[in-house]
Length: 280
Image (tube, rainbow, N blue to C red):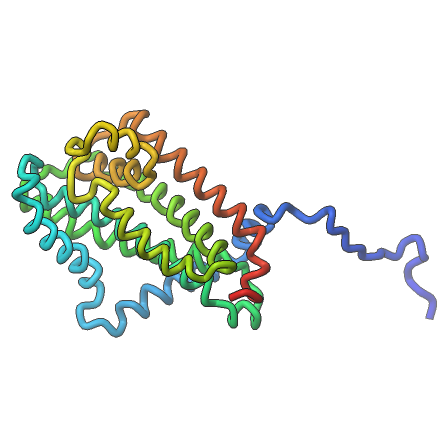
């Protein structure tokens, strides 16, 4: 049978690696293709977390409340000059718990997912992104006890609380960047995962969560400017606890640091993601 195409009309498929997108853009392209998987993973994590729990969704609210009560009992007399100290502590704890839990979950899903990565193809970053998505759901639920405590201790809830969506987004960006960076290191040095938990504990006490920034010595206050979580927790408190619109000097450091860490983490992870299946 005569070919329907002449030789000049026949197409030849040629793979040209030079035309492939840079790793960071290729990873982003694949994540957009698998965006429905991100949704399903977040849904699975939320449902499985509360389905078998006696307290259900209430546990997300009670967990930071329990920590707040302990810290308030210990430090309230020391920092009694802070108005509504319980709300001050809880507003910092809610932001910190999001960062701590989401980064740890993202690292665990990537570092220990080697078998799954070898069996089926998915862009590895979707697991870190889904951890952040689950954390955002928990963060929104944690606002319920925070607002209740604010009412109890007499801290006004103002319209500026709507702006809290911005620090939440920046917290998500920063947490994703840290999770991707630590995961990229952990495939070469597994001990990094355990060391990170120690670093988190030290980082918690180096961030003004249970104490005000003003009590720090002047030299330490200068160093605090290089602590990204100081800026993020502060921005979160400004919109909720203080109930006001953040100024540019309060907003820009948190925004710049979050985007830099996210960009760096994404770039490093995209270049190393192909090795996760074989090193983990």
